[in-house]
Image (cartoon, helix red, strand yellow):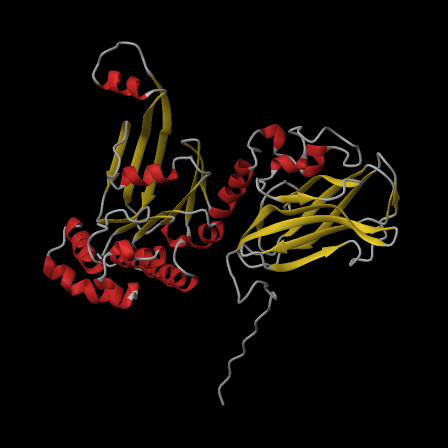
Length: 431
């Protein structure tokens, strides 16, 4: 296969000024003193995309993902380096790119087609396909500034894929459409792959990255730190998310935390398990304080602390409780909700018929929930609880609502939230 995108030693540097006056003085050449700080959105990036590949780019916010796509599409100019593109390119970048808000949807179809080098007759021949795919009805004759975000992305994607591109570039835009439209778009992806076209896309949806990409590139702080097959790079990304790329932090939970029964360090210490997770900064926490959830984590099948779990893999949620007074038979609870806040599943030590015992001030209890992941691919919220009965009254010692998220990565989903892990057998015969 030939190379359709080739990038060599790509840099993109921005000048950051502390004051607006410094920007003006620098632009007018009024001083020889350096008045700015250099910020590299991309630093010495090399990558090649071959014809017919579907390549994903992942990384945390600010890693340079969107910047590299904008340079490839000509929206931005590189500071240095070489970028070669071979083939007709169509791009769907941030919502609204290339659209005039004062034009109708139909007028924007012709505007975008003309900008892509098509004549009116060529756009006319593709118009019905665009309208059918967008499926926004009479809104095509309304100004796009009146569109919802979902309508906008439907039309933008319909235009992008129907100008017969050899290379399609997509930057997170599909997260805006509804599930049915997203499904239609991914069917189009597969159709493009079958036609030998090239797709390059950025997404935080690791399930889509795992399912559709032949190869994945991982960026972090403007540098390419990984490239390879989806599962391999997703595993690396999981470590980046929780700052575990350093070798001394990449071992199992047992190696990272030592004896879980020891009281350990104070809450702000970076060696807490929970500080290896991506936490919800606005979680709801309350309780009477007689006992508290001091630490917690989730680990994958290799024992590494992470927010990301592969579907069907075993995983654990570990909760560490510290007691400030006498507590009898505390109940430690775990629940999982969808992004809309609907509780999907959960358990606790009482449901599991675990007698937790008696505790006094200074005692520590560590509870580990171990199970396989059978939720569909997507993002979920985890809540933790510590409750019990005190002098006959139900008592909340400590609750942490929506404290962290789980990203489930799946290569195959079924209907609903839960996968029954069905095994399908088929027999064919002829009378």
